[in-house]
Length: 123
Image (cartoon, rainbow, N blue to C red; front, top):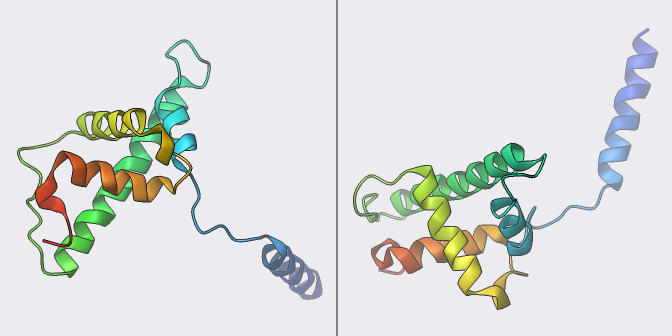
């Protein structure tokens, strides 16, 4: 039985090694599509969850970067909800369609800085 496990692990490792790695999982077009899924779509709840989860994950990482680089964490004015943050990113993607081929994580960060200029890491 041990030989079977070893072969299975070796095959899994080989398959993973053959899969090309992407620098970014989503581009702005994919994020925009998830965030704009119609409420009558059978995938609406999953897409809405994907949209908010992605954006809040990038937001949390962005705020962590600020803390690590010595910036204050409180650049966003007031208590922001995940829905409000989603609206900020959705509006940015809507208003900048020419940038949607760029990585979604970068565009999310740009939307945060656009809405709250005090969040810029260069300040």
